[in-house]
Image 1 (cartoon, rainbow, N blue to C red):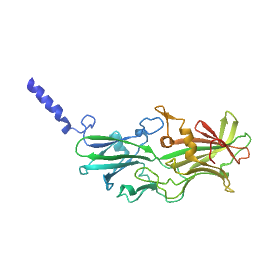
Image 2 (cartoon, one colour; image 1 turned 90 degrees about the horizontal axis):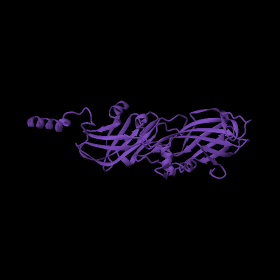
Image 3 (cartoon, one colour; image 1 turned 90 degrees about the vertical axis):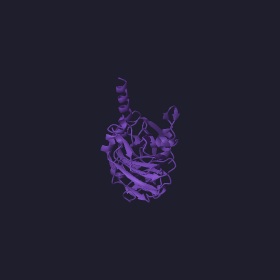
Image 4 (cartoon, rainbow, N blue to C red; image 1 turned 180 degrees about the vertical axis):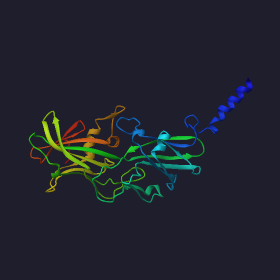
Length: 321
């Protein structure tokens, strides 16, 4: 009986040297565990939103080593973990993008040096009227790589936003035609570096990918007839100027021109995490969809109120036009 226990002990303690079918039972290798919890619900939604990923591996000095492209099928099979292998033992840092392989994005600059890495919109035009596909970013600072088992969490962040903009007059008998107006976002946010910071290059104008008429029932003003626009933009940053503009197509007259991150930031402070209000930047990064209702005067010449999600701002008291 003592000999039987000895045999069982040897089998149990050596099983992970020859069984690699389940890394949870027999952990092996160097893994990047991708997590998308940086959202308003603070839950891991990576399995729902992350598609294929591209991992750029750099040494401790920021020199490019290799690129690992992983299709969504492999991500699912490995529970949204990426196996890193085939590189010498040493210290490395990792830059991870999900969605960057879409043909609407491009890698530019000198990717051989981490500080020169750039991710841009693929089309070098100054105007975009498409619905940009989802883009997510994550990174891992310098860590040691060797033959021992290791699992490192990589927190992903969404790098684009979608806006549903409704323009309505504060009077019931006024009807607006979407073809008479231009809604746009203008910002120098079309290029990002390996640290997910915006790199100033040139202003990008984001135009609607969809526009139509809309009818809303407002508790204060009744049934209102207006127009709606759908726009996507890349990452919004508090310190980067970003203007949300409505103008008349025939004359170019601007009905309003608001600082978009500033307006959203006033709403963001109303949300909390662990009892503390979100900073402006954290709100801009966690929230990826905004519903904005712009209430205009009856003559359609002036912005009176702006509603962001369920919160209202008065133009004279809150908005910087």
